[in-house]
Image (tube, rainbow, N blue to C red; front, side, top):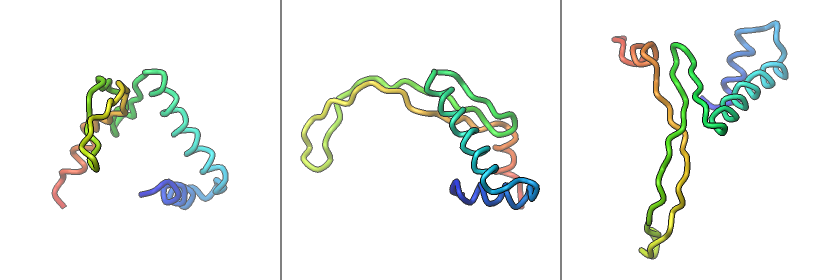
Length: 94
């Protein structure tokens, strides 16, 4: 599902909200999750999962085209850990 499909689905299920309102709500949620992660905080959505960041150390990588060594800087990457309810939902028998 892409962002526009999510907005359309929420708008369909909530006819009292305009499409513009739903787009603002979805953007605000994503912006807040992004801001919290950028500040190093953890975001937990009960029943869905938790977003956090993990540190990656600096390393030497390889350019796949030429094979030359390339310095890769240390960085933080997003990490998602699914919640128990989400894992159960994915693995229930159909």
